[in-house]
Image (cartoon, rainbow, N blue to C red):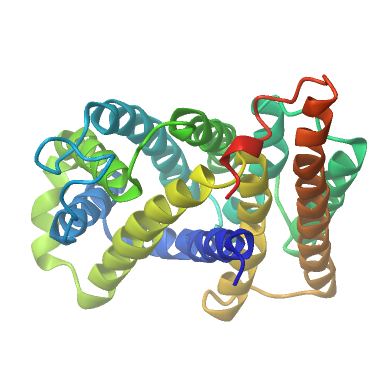
Length: 315
């Protein structure tokens, strides 16, 4: 499989697990306080990172194969922005439906290229418009109510997540940062941030049932460790905008999980909306890919390339 396709598959897998995370997080926060859920999610992921064998030496490693100065510094920075995304998302989904949460967060698709300051062709924004039309149909198909606190928190999460995706691309460009080590630092930062707020709810973990623990482990290992690691690796090898396009399929997976496992009703408008989101995502992806391929030609002719296109990061 070509490297570009492998990157797409990884990003799509991240979108799938994140799409499933809304129903999982909503169910978990029904049983435990939000800070406790976030602390366990980060702490388990940090322990899993520590358990993964590390290859010592290598160009990116420190004198003993440990964390480099850049990995510590940028890992802490990305840990703060990722924690901000998760706290907004988790409180948001706790106060709205899992379907609404997955739909609103898809605004990341439109916000990422804006924050990435990419000069893309108008066709890209037409594709984004198709995606947003699809989201509108999905919302109508599930009877979206007047936006409440949870919906507004999810909107804020979409803005912060778009900024986080762009930041990952910017800080990893041209730097020898290893995804696993960077993810380990992010998880440790998140666990430290939520330890104190979670402390009052920690005794309840001893009385937590197996189903809730399974949800916590899924959030930590799949929606946390795997997603953080995979996103960091993929964005290092592509553009933030392209990553945003594939991650933009998340509302479709959220809808499928909600209908398949959460008992939400799937209407004809929902099916049409999901089809538009997928179509718009891959149309936009093809436009962005063609734009990146033409960027080196434009640069050779003296036309400045956009700093956010990620051309130099494509493998």
